[in-house]
Length: 324
Image (cartoon, rainbow, N blue to C red; front, side, top):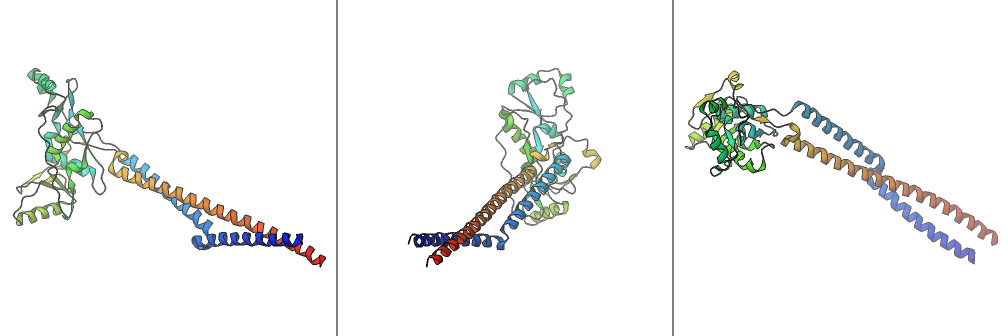
């Protein structure tokens, strides 16, 4: 009788083990058509390859798209209370789909000497400059002065432009305040940059800029700014229809904004986000791979347990048969 009770308990336990084993087998079968471990390993491999590819691209672009310094011809060394020349207060961002070098040339052609304007930290600092001998002021080559304490109201934001073929952005939208500008003078620097770049409309090509001008003229409307195609950055179309053509050899002598390093740019941020997303995907794939391995290990363990209990039950049943 005791053996019969033991047999019943063993059968119950064996059935429970078989049920658990069936659940694990089904779980493995559901995962990627039965090749769960292989599929998980492939996902990890693909994610890691993507990370390597993206990191290589980041390194390559970091090397090839380095920061470019601003250029101006003012002599402000030794002057007290100078925040900086306008060319050095801003920097051109590297934005997707927009050639930063072409923007640099277009802004130089549009702004010309304005990029040599100088921002002083205070009215007192500007007054101190005014009190210098005429020869000293002449040697500084400063054509235009601003005081951070006496800036007029900020210019209106660039108007919203609907879908226009070839239109990329207003130049002010791709020009940032340089990180070296002290916090207390960033607002003044932003205003100076906006006044210089807010009304410059960037198009992919000059023909698209010209087509927009003609369409606005035909509708009896004025363009909200000067127009330039980045394929001809020295060829600016004014709102009155006149064109200012800057020869390429002359453009190199103009003051110009610097260009931000790729790693600190909008494109750098976007690629960095892709890398972080790929790293997150790889981490998820590794967790899934670990889970599959654990399910497989549990399944293998249950198989061993079932086989052992089947053997034990068979042995017990032989004993019962021998007693009858």
